[in-house]
Length: 290
Image 1: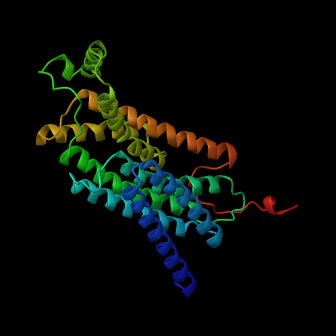
Image 2: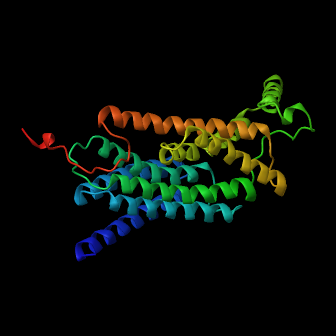
Image 3: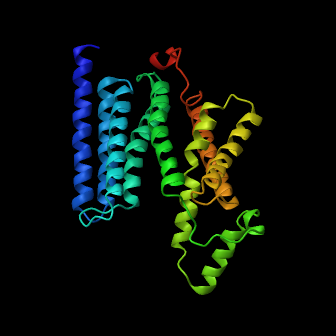
């Protein structure tokens, strides 16, 4: 590692730290937390462009995204653990803050790699793998929290043993019908369904990305087995609620993740003529010939 690399790495960490402090400051002092999220998106875009344009490879964006994602994740966890607190309140915007600090540089670098015919920038395949690791570490921690520490539960009481335990969406549909009839708010149900679905989008996306060359039957087995293991673990541990609706929402989330990867991969094939995150072993000289 030469002196220039050390200097750039130090600059990345310094700018990331300043950005992290500003995001925490805005979240604490500005009641409209959307301001902190918008600030995070804008700063992440500017820094992602600066790091890529100044270094001509994606490594410093990985360092920046990892630092910001880990920093905001720790900040969100601390705020959550000290609740109730009269000075700072935890809400869903903190989850969004963590997400935008990861997804903004990821999408920016993905777009630059898609439109880069050179290649002028090196190492997107490595960037993709490292960004996957950053997200999956957070994902594992979130799954542990949502399943075993503060389990996801629906806004209705668990029904007695019967058809609702085996017919997908029967319990949810019954509650929805009752809520509409009584004029009750549907916000708790919407939040429950959205959270249950979103939890499995990353799993579907990364199985599709990293196991795309595996047998279809084995991939299908993974998709069906993982949520089943999670639901059975809740049933055996007595934590949360193991239910057919949760399993069905998990399948929907994975299908969304699979679709997202194939859409992105299809765009890469159509525009760049290659797979997403594929290694560039050769350079097409026609791009450099007038």
